[in-house]
Image (cartoon, rainbow, N blue to C red):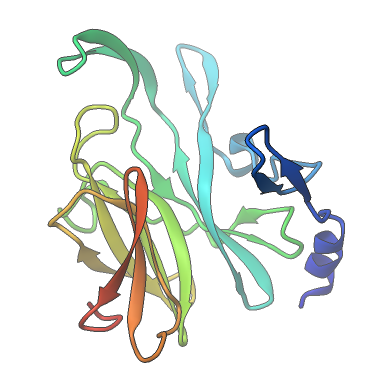
Length: 226
């Protein structure tokens, strides 16, 4: 393991077992004292509107070790505006963010704490590269599969905050986190946060699928290329 990252891990703490009033117990992770390790202004997620500096958002990242460094794939937002809309289903006025289109900006770190942009790479879903979904790519998870890295995220087929049935599993892959190949999306159902297993189990490939409020285990009949 990388010396700097190894030293950082040693300082993270061991977590604790916490008893609940119900008699059950949970394991609570220790929070890193220097969180957040990435803030929007650190990576240039700022803009000016009516003479006022605005700060965007960076969150929900996948993580992996690549070439002895830590790679993150956070969703990044900038240039959006706060507004309201009428929710016909609930019959009320609700707050929302207009133009809240997510891009993914890979970040890199030697120690897992101090991150910078990785060669200014951007993964977009705004219609530039394809038309499958054009309202952003969110929450990419990194799964190492052989020599490739699968990037599995959520492609938005409708504007955020503006409609149900808007999330589709989107699949990319890369060998170097610079050149990324888009393979398509799962069109048939609304879902996000899918995570394929990195290796087969007893010769079968599986994937975890989130269907609120549960997580399901599915078998990929055609293997990882499915």
